[in-house]
Image (cartoon, rainbow, N blue to C red):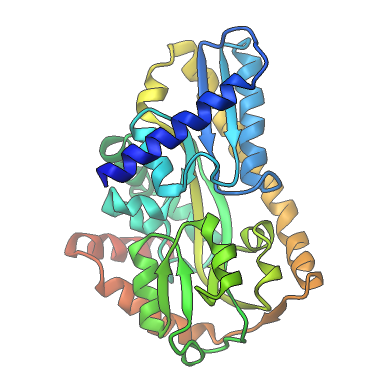
Length: 329
């Protein structure tokens, strides 16, 4: 792990050095933030961060500035989190992958936990949701700047999947979050954790056979070029946290903290508007791109996956799980 982090630090520092060398000189910025995105420039997350950058630069009279790097140019998701903690970069978006650092984060990205977006909002605004945000600061050193709704996650493949029995050890890429591995293994697949930036080429080469993501991510990554079927599993209602390093945030003077937090609230509203506009349109685009939408037996998926995910939790997290079920009904 230390060797990986060291190599990551060297790689990012070299990237930032050569970027700086090729950037025209500007007036000095007091607080320069660098954000690592896993998505491309046309995704709502990237657009939202660019909007946030415009707000903080304008309202701080140039004292704060944000540089946004798409497509994991700076680092893959887990590495980006480590680099923020090390103070090399400053921002990213994540959720379930943070389970690797604090167990409570498993509920931000858990298959078969929430039935709809209303339940999601109830969880985020509940005491458990506030505990998640608090533990991100205390245990990981990351501050949530809000949340971005991600939509339901669905399975793409090159054969139709209507029932868990159809999986038959299908090799599925999943994020590096334990609940995903447990759920898909229980359903009969072979889950393979992998960085998002590696998924397209791995599908193309046949290293993996399927992947699961929301509609916008499927479109943004061009998966319609290498996957024919979009199986409407809807197995997960999830969101992503736009994050800033807590140390980086605390370095700001009080007047800039106020500007920063207000701009973050406006970024969340802006991104949600883009998300709603994009959601219906992107489904039609995926169909035009040749993807076949497949209706699935959701109850069969739920029955096989939900219990396995619950049994994988620690006793403390099982108690939290039951509370979440109560407050999101």
